[in-house]
Amino acid sequence: MRNAIAEVAEVTRNTSAACAAAGVAPATYYRSLKERPQRERQRRGTPPRRLSQEERERVLLVLHEDRFVDKPVRQVYATLLDEDVYLGSERTMYRILEENGEVKERRDQLRHPKHPKPELVATKPNEVWSWDTTKVRGPEKGVTYWVYVIIDIYSRYVVGWTIAEREDAEIAEALIAQAIAAQQPSKNLVIHSDRGGIMVSNNVTDLLITLGVKQSLSRPRVSNDNPYSESHFKTMKNAPIYPGNFGSIQDARNYFQRFFDWYNTEHYHTGIGLMTPFVVHYGLAETCLKARQSVLRKAFFEHPERFVRGMPRPRKPPEAAWINAPAPTKPKMPPHTVASGKTSVR
Image 1 (cartoon, rainbow, N blue to C red):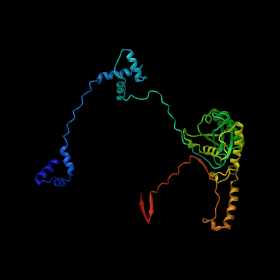
Image 2: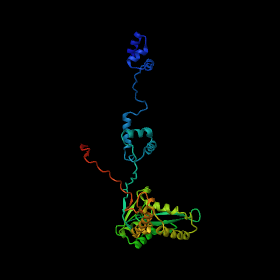
Image 3: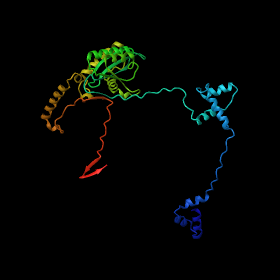
């Protein structure tokens, strides 16, 4: 192309016109004139320091010896030097092993099992409980107390709690046994928790097996698998009257006794239709709904103009409480769709 443009330009004495006729920019044509012809690259010879094929095979044979087969290269290299033998550098040995696909982790590596995502649902009280522990501050730095809380995920009712100076599996075992004895749940009860030390302890596991209670555990390092306990602790520590720290273990017990009584019987919980956990847990929700509906109906008939959407209705508790509800499945498209009287096949 460059030669053709040159010939046309020589005849017409107009390089721009010749480039336009060829569909090439003048700058491209002039740049091609300055380009030097590419030289053919000479094939690189074998580096003089490279081991011969026989030497490389010898290195591989030595590395395959029974005494070296489970040792890292640096150990082999040092052993050979002490035996007055030099076959090559450490890097050379690694390179030969890599070329033969033998560079890998020789030690047994821990394989973390894949834990399934827990999917739990409660449609009434005492079907699924969630429990956890949290620390609260004591009278001085370094002094902490542990609060153990068991909560029903359907009603948000605290079915058991205690506070101690340490986190201990025996304390947890006693608390769970006490809560089960007090509530008398059905045989299908599931108790969910994270994978803390006391949660997976033999004390707790053996107790649940003995009582016929199913144990459910969160996935490792997934805090969202235990949302009800985490949310409850947030409410507990963000309460306006929460002192921040306690002067003694007895002060903490007195405070949490008042707090959990308030939480169960006076706290209107958003997640259960602005009812108290006590009302939902002990089957008083329908009575509460009817009473609230009566109040709203009276207000509606007195001033209907204030309710632009018609008769107001009180909030209802959800029909089910989930831990990791399954994602809704998308409906499959039918093979035939009818539109405007015509049938189209997908």
